[in-house]
Amino acid sequence: MYPTQTRGGLGVRTFKVTDKTGRVAAARVVSENEGQEVFIISAMAQVVRINLEDVRITGRDTQGVIVWRDRDPGDYVASIACFQETDYTKELPEANSKKSDEE
Image (cartoon, rainbow, N blue to C red; front, side, top):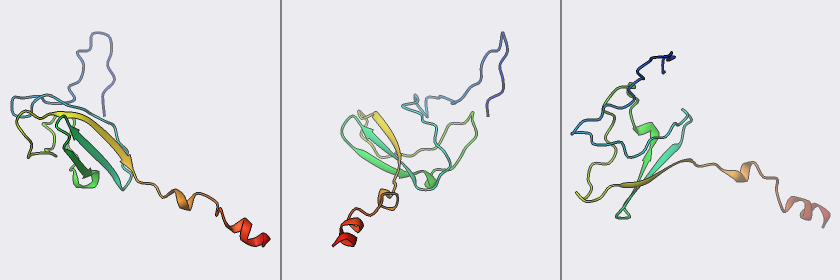
């Protein structure tokens, strides 16, 4: 939660950036739905898939959670993608049911 700022407000810190944590590569706002996952794609084409239920929730002004530890020293995060698998077959009407009824 962010407090309301008024004129002359100095802002609110969201991430605690230190030499240990490094710079923030990317950030996304996610909902608390089950089954959400994140792909982290590196510049050297390494992909890490993480279920968000496995990442602990921390406070706003913290150093964060390490989600990708074993990487090459010259590699860096190129992109991230958040997604939630959806079974669209449950939402679509049966395509062959009308044809089978007519026959």
